Length: 69
Image (cartoon, rainbow, N blue to C red; front, side, top):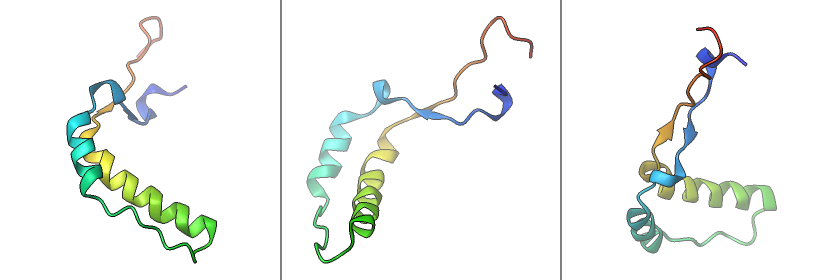
């Protein structure tokens, strides 16, 4: 695995849960039922990401100690 190209992962342990809850309470979660499943999922996933991404920091995994730089 190339550690120079590791993608950051969400660090859910340090998420600001109270802000996520506040944002979720203000979000209109309605999804038009006439949409296809894929379109409805895309709409829901977009709303979910907008409500959670700003409040969850990202973590870049560290390189193992026994691997060369």
